[in-house]
Image (cartoon, rainbow, N blue to C red; front, side, top):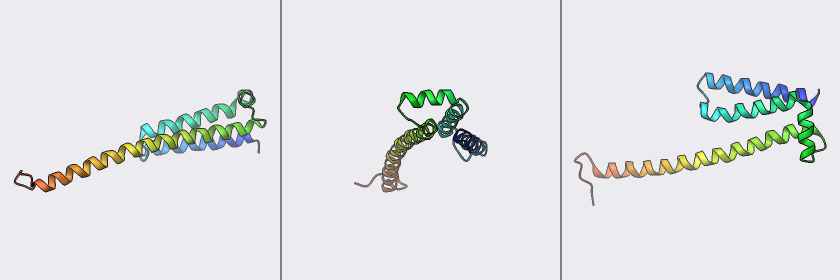
Amino acid sequence: MNPYIYCLVLSALFLSGTLYFVKKRVLDFKYSMFWILTSLVLIVLSLNKDLTENMARAVSISYPPAFLFVTGIVFIFFLIFYLNLVISKMQNKITLLVQEIGILKSCGSEGECKK
């Protein structure tokens, strides 16, 4: 099978899967934008062989279809970094929330905090 067609099929399946999960509200829209963008970029590169070959030549990749996979891997690295930022932010919010709950529990129902 032609590597361009293979990448096109995989990207199209991934795009349709992403849209399906967004429609079912399993995947949040703001996180799906990255996957949609990645799929569209790979679809454009798969459909435009000359563009892929020129870009591969520009970064000294001798086998142009490998450029498609390298592009996908780079997008995944960006996604992993972004998700780590989101996790760190959520962890800070959870820590703050646990501290606030601890303070509220120590105050009790009378409204006076224990010292």
